[in-house]
Length: 514
Image (tube, rainbow, N blue to C red; front, side, top):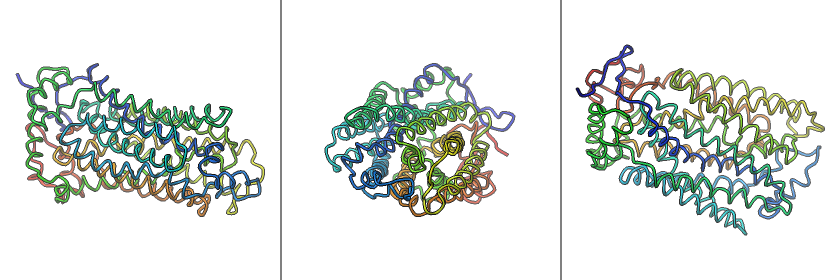
C-alpha cells in the first residue's frame, strides 16, 4: 500500500522515513561547506591583530598601534579604511557570486555550486598565503568571497532538501556548526601561529584556508544530488530511487508525487526573479531580506572577525586577545550543539526569543562595563584583571545567545520556507542581503567603534529589540512541517493570510491546518 500524507494530531502532514546512516553521513559531509565561511571569519581578525602582518601591509595602522599607550584613545587605534577593505572585500564578492550561484544551482544542481565554491576558495587561499602586496591580499579575498557565495547559496538548500522533515532543523544547523568549528579552528591556529619567530605565521593562517576548501571540493564530488534537484532536471526514475535510499523506506510515493508536483509548478516559471514579485511570495521575500538583515545587526560578525582587535582595544595584550577569541570560539561551538539538540524539540520561535533576550542583556552590560572604564575619551588607565574577565564572560554569554538563535536559525529558516519554483532565486537574495550587510558592517565597524565608542553595543542592542518584535509578529513556527507543505503556514498567519490564499496553496490530501 503506498504511503499517504497522514493528518496527525496537530494537523501536520507526515511522510514516512527514517534518519538513516546514509542521510546522516551525507548531511554531515555537505555541512562541512560551512567550514570555509567560519575559517575566514575567524582568521581575518586574528591576522589583523598580528604586528608582523600590520607592519608589512598596513604600516600606518602598525605605527598608530605602536604609539598607543594607556593614556591614548584606545577606540581609534585600528581605524583604517584600507584595513577594513581587506576584511570586507570578501563579502562584496560573495554577494555578487551568490547571484550567479542561483542560476548554477537551479540548472545544474546543488553539487556543482558546492564544487565551484571549494575551487574558488582554494585559489584565494593560495594567493593570500603567498601575498607580497596589498593588491594580492584583496584579489585573494575576492576569490574567497566568490567561493563563499557559491557555498552559502547551495549548502543550506542541499541540507534542507536531503533531511527528513522531522530532523531538518538539526541537520541543517550542521551548516552553522561547521561555521563555528571553522571559527574556533582559525582562532586556535592564529594563537599558535602568532608565536612563530620571524613574523611569518600570518602566511600559515591565510594559506591554511586551503584545507577547508579541499574538504568541500572533495565532498561535492562524492555527495549524491538531492531528489528535489534531480526531479527539477527531469531525472524522475533516479530521483525516486534516491528518495527511497535517503528515507530508508520503500513507500515514498506521496512525498515523491508532491516533489514532482512542486517541480512541475516551478517549470512553468520562466523568470524566477520576476516571479518573486508576485503577491503570494510577499512573506517569502520579506523573510529572505529581513532575517539576514537582522542576523548581521546582532553585531555578531564584527565581534567574531574583529574579536582579537576588539579585545586588544579594550586592554588585552596581543596573545591574550587571541586566547580570548579562542574562548569565544569554544562557546560558539557548544552553544550551536545546544541548538541542534533543541531546534526540533522547542521550535524556532522559542530559540529566537531566548537568544534575543540573552543578547540584549549582554549588550547593555558590556556597554556599561566599557563605558565605566573607557568613558568617551577611550583612556582607561590601568585595567584590573577582574575587569577583563567580566568583559570576556559577558561577551561569551552574548555569543552563546546568538549561536543557538540567530546564528543557527538565520540559515535554517530561510532555506526551509521557499517553494521550489523560487527556491534558488530566493536563497540568492538571502545570501546576498547577508553578505551586503556583512560587507557594510565590516567596512564601517572600526570607524563606528572610533566614533560611537562604547555606544556601539547599545546600537546593536536596539536592533536586537527590533528583531525580536519582528519574529513575534511576523514569523510563524515552522517546526515539523514538510518543506513542500510550508506554504500552508502563511495561509493561517494573522498577517500573511491577506497575501496568501487557498488558490495559491491548495490543501494537500490529508493535510489541514487550523
